[in-house]
Image (cartoon, rainbow, N blue to C red; front, top):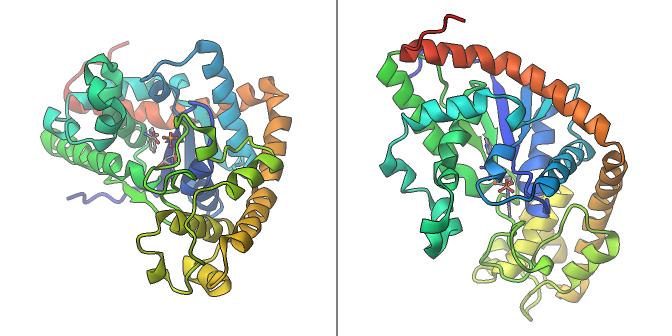
Length: 340
Ligand code: AMP
Ligand code: TRP
């Protein structure tokens, strides 16, 4: 085990693949902001190298990357306090990704449930990148020797793989270069579910737009999606136990709790015994009050693409200054000559 104590540093990323959802907000971005404001060094990335593991139209990719940057800032990430950049501007990610894919074992990759979910029966037609992507994610984290990684529940397995890769590298080369990063999965909404099906994750890529709340939805759209969200005919219970076997009800309670910063118990203490006819309008109002200012600010920022690009360029230089020396130490440990 590691003897060295590493400086506390947070790294996380989101794919600029469009349609940032309430799930991304509650599971990830809201937490990014809390960590930024707790005084730890924070680095947040738009992972465009990950996004292209499935087809992205070039014009749309550029736009989605700026939109994600705008969302980060509109939600409260401050480019002075956090390093904000798009992954492809810092070449250490791709380089370390290759080096670590020579450390990761095929057996480990074959256990990744996200690949199985995304590839389904079409694995033969998927890109090699989609399969290799967890090794790139390990590189993202380890290039900064990050110690904490705030993510939603679905990314836990990838952070655990990162720990395995870090430990094997340190062991194989007899160094203490990489920390064991901790996944930080906290809050009432670490897995926000679809509004149409409480057994499925709320996702950018769900074909039904009604299944999710997008960060760019206007107030009427948010309210209408919540009003039409699937539920059951029972009133809300007064205790958490009463949500068993009621995934849709549980999801709406969790969303309410996460948005208002209280526990699901507290939500049930307030709404227990009430019908969805009362709860849904309260949730809609809460969601609109929370999200409308964010989408307004995003629209304002999106009108200044040059300013967004400037922020990303500045962030990339600061990120590179941390990652390049780590990459140099990795190559040195592996036995590569650097003589330029
Ligand atoms: P992605 O959109 O797949 O790039 O995910 C970016 C971040 O959002 C990751 O930390 C995910 O775990 C988180 N995330 C995505 N969807 C959800 C969801 N439905 N509930 C909670 N967190 C989510
Ligand atoms: N794989 C993550 C997702 O799809 C995004 C991601 C890429 C990431 N690199 C990362 C998250 C590094 C945390 C740390 O959601």
